[in-house]
Structure formats: structure tokens, C-alpha cells
Length: 550
Ligand code: NOJ
Image (cartoon, rainbow, N blue to C red; front, side):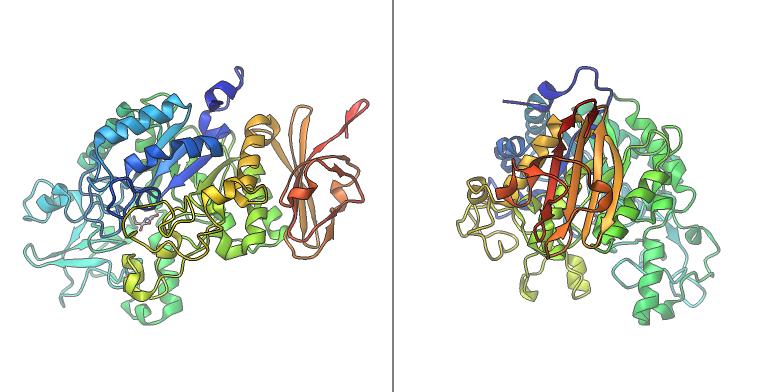
């Protein structure tokens, strides 16, 4: 069994989270072992052989903690336990041990911005204005006319302020009213949340993905006089202005945020070799600030650009160059193609281009995060209104995130090997072709492509930690190279559906095609006359010519 630990180079100074590839598991949807239609930790344990076979290095689990599930676990009522739906702390310990034995890592989801309204801290806080935990949350008086302190709107509509009739004040929530926001300016909150991190680090958790980290500084608007209206409630009726206002507000990024981030980083630094990844939906020049300048930021502020850029060579290459240029010294890049909040890559780009996206994700410089099921080419699953579960979809039609959260497909059976019961969300169409069992035996499958790319990336230093250089774009094709010393790889991607030539700057090289999105090309020769097929992406190992690398 080849674990990452055995392959790791002895002198490599790169950390595991730089060399490795992260795989996001949405626990409700990965594997149900106890037969209730919802995935669980024993289910994940059962599937570790698969993840090791696939070749990923770390797993990030979306929240598994006790929660009323108003936002499917992003509303936590106990930060230091496991929801019985998912199993027990003992199951989690087994998962940690089993992953570590395989040379793999486990990351959890840290949700510091808000708790559940059922968390004992909030129950205490709302019990009276004199509660010692009153100022753990953000409470404000109504304005003179009884309306909320300001016009802030919640992420999915309605006021961000919820009236508490008993104590006659409003509390603040960017997301659901069931997700009241913690006041991180309060040292007691910082201390309690730091202890949460320590609890898990001591248990062997290797890192955290941090939910909406950009919100922790709190909006300056909340701190000002209660009669100031920051966002006029009138915009709520104007969809464009309301959406702009929400975007600005929901992603926060108030200056005070960085001080809170530094406090969290300091806790992680009490332990060896842990990683902090943060959810940062911000323009790239503001995103890179989350790295900090001297080890006081997070290790990997998620880079979501590939979710938003037009799927065209020039803008993508420009975005890569800009991102690389803006990275602070020693900052390590990262790339994401999908997650539990965004339409799946196979649906956004179509099946053929989703393969190109896989090559891009796994050959760019920086840590890739793979969203479960994307390695199968799973599409968004249409969910009928009566089957919808996501509260945001229920509040605002068209906003549901259920389509990208449907169960993993393990085999061609009606419930895809995910559960023996009725799955919590439908499995969706085309399960007969898009499932692990089927794709494992098909060398043309997306799964095969992912596995090959992961193996090559792991084997080749140029691909895992090497330098990146753009070789430009021409028509529908983009090219770049990755190098480490004399080792070199050329990557050429056709983002179009017609055959196309290799861009000029990438010519003058000959070599062998190591990976192609078209299986019949693998192992064949590459030279200046090479014509890429429609939707073809290739990874080429250039031949070494006498005296120089070709
Ligand atoms: C971002 C998470 O990814 C999303 O799923 C959740 O609804 C919000 N944060 C609130 O926690």
C-alpha cells in the first residue's frame, strides 16, 4: 500500500498541505452505514480504501457536530462533540487513526462566526439582559419606531436582525435567524473558541476549513449608533441593489477581521504541522491579505476564482498570473473547482470541459481541493420543489444548494450503494454510468483521469511543488509549464470544441503525452505539428535533448 508518507521525499521542506490534495466530503452524502438515509462517519471509514486508491492526501469534512440542522450543520449547538446522526467521538477517533495509519490527514470545519440558536451559550445569552453571556452575541436596541437597528439584510433575504420578545432587543445574524452571530471582540468568546480548536487539535485533527472567516471582524456598521441605517431597507425590493448590498455585507472583510484571524492562527501554532484554510469570497487583492505578512494569517485562504472566471484561456491565464504576482512571499497558492455551495463543475462547464478543468486543477501550482463526486463527473441533480431540503432554497426559489449535495454514487443500484434506505436527497439520473464501480473499470472515465493526474502529481515534484510559467493562449487553447530543477512538464488545454493548434510560445518542444483527456493519445509523441482534439487537454513530459531540456 503506497501511502503519501512512503512517497514523501526525505529532503522536501514542503508541508503536507502544500504537496497534497484535499478532498471535501459532505458527510450527509458520502456513505450511509446505519441505514437512515443520511451519511455517517462509519460510512466514511468504510470508504477510506477508495480515497486512498484515488490518491488524495487529506479529507475535509463539512460539519459533523451536534446541530439542529437548520443549515445542515453550519448551525452548531455543541462544538466539541459529534452529532449522533453521524456517529460518535469514538467513530471520529477511529477515522483519525485510520487516516493517519494510511499517511492521510483529517480536517474539520470550524464555524466561528455563528452558533445555533440552540447552543447553550445563546440560550444563556438570550435568557436575560443580565446574562453573563449576553455580550457573547450582538444585541442591539430597536430604533425609536421599533424597527431593527439598521437596514442590514440577511444573506438570503429578510432583516439581519431578529427581535427577542422576552429581552426586548434584536440580535444579529447574517445567515438564518437560527444562526446568531458571536461577538469576537469579546475576549471570553475568543478564549472559548480557542479551547474548541485546542480540543480538536489535541485529538489529532490536522487542520480546519474556517467558515466565513471574512465576517469575524464584524461590520463597523453594527458598532455605530443604532439609528444609522447602513443599507436602506428599500433596496430589499430592488433585486440588483439588494444583491450588491448583501454581497458587500455578507463578505465583510472589516479591518478588525485580521486581528481575529491572527488570534486563531496563534492557537494553531501551538501545535505541530496543522493547517488553516479559510472561506474567502473576495477580490484577489483583498483575498491575499488573509495570508498575513509574517505568519499571522491563515495558510490557505480558499481561492475560488475558477468558480467565477469566464471559461476562456486568456482570462484564466491572466487571473493565474495576477494571483501569483499578488501572493505575499512564502504564501502558498490553492485552487478550488467546486464545493457544497456552488453548482458542480460538470454542470457549469459540461462534461467534456469538466475533464479539462480536472487537468487544470491538478496541474496548477498550489493545493487543489476536490469536491466529492466531481471525480465521477457527477452533475447537479434537479430537485423537485417537494424534495428540496436546503433552507436557502426554501426561502428563495432557485437558490437551493441541494443539487450539488446529492449522494455519492458507488454502484449502479437504485440507491447507488449510498444507503439501504431512502436517501435524504435523490440520487439523480444516469447512475448506471456515473458511479465508482462502473468508472473504475473504464479507462475512459473521468475517475480514471483524476486518478492518473493525482498519481502523476504525487510522483512528479515539478507538478506537486514546482514553479509555474504561462506559455500563453491562442484561440481556444492555453498552455503553461511546471518545472522543478531539470524536471519539466508542459500542459496544453483546449477550452473549445474544435481541433486547435498549440500556442506559439509552447512550440519547439517535443515529448511524450503522459496524460490526455483522450485516452487513445496517451503515450504518443508530441511535437510542433500536434493538433489538439476538441475538448482535449494534455500533460506532456518534454524529451531531454543533448545539453538542455527540450
Ligand atoms: C458558508 C458555508 O459554506 C455555507 O454552506 C453555509 O450556509 C454558510 N457559510 C453559513 O455557515
